[in-house]
Image (tube, rainbow, N blue to C red; front, side, top):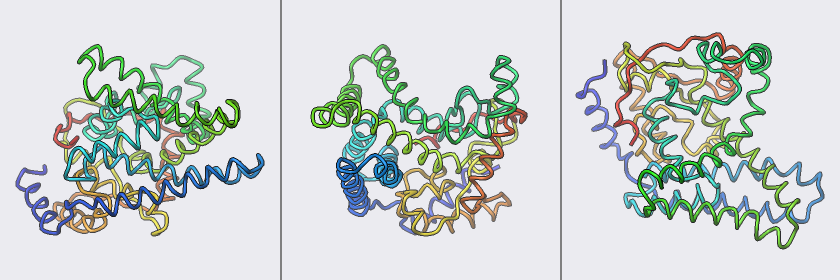
Length: 349
């Protein structure tokens, strides 16, 4: 059991190492660089033949997906000590640039995923209908879904992750409706709704005036499908293939749950640049307020602390994690979830 004294010890050591200090200029510069490359490539697409667009599109999506993950940092308020600037970055990148609702993402990611990683019925990052991610889910499915899960879901998983952002876009609209019913039209609602509307105006309406709706819509769909795949290759490798838990009483507390269900990824430096710190999932999950540029400095401290308590610090080569995810999904329909207690909400900050 990790005690409050254990947590104070490692937090003090991390604070003394300066890893909680913000890097606004560096992070903003990186965002400007990524978006400059992405939109320069989008401009090139307007003069390319179809085959050229097909070849260049993965590169465009790669730079755009990395920019999206800087928005993720704004959502955790690890970008700036000034909450307004963090929220400004977050709303610019997520609902405006990506069409991913600010209200929806904070609930889905900051609260449910960070507080309850790999916990069935709470963390829906691991759920993608019609696939099954536990034996219990498989047994509740109908006969056609069960056939697909037994025989095809290992092959379907990565292509289907191209729908990831689309499901979030749809649920973002639903989150606005639910928020308005529960809280009324708040400042957060207005900011989120306005940014989402401007997203579709900027990506679809205005370009269609110059290039026609069908080419613009086709490009938009293809670009965000690849962006979805790249985001899945980042987020799922940090968790999937590790134990799936069900909400209930068990042996792990909230901090041990994070360690049980989270892994770091060993990457070459050029690829780590595009992961925006999410190759250090353990440090990010335990201390989401650490800016991504400081996570490599935090990692040795956290690893020493974890291993000093006799716990496992999961760290594997990236493509080993991709293989683990693929094998896990192929067999997940026959893997039961294991009970754990509800994790502490403080980790969702």
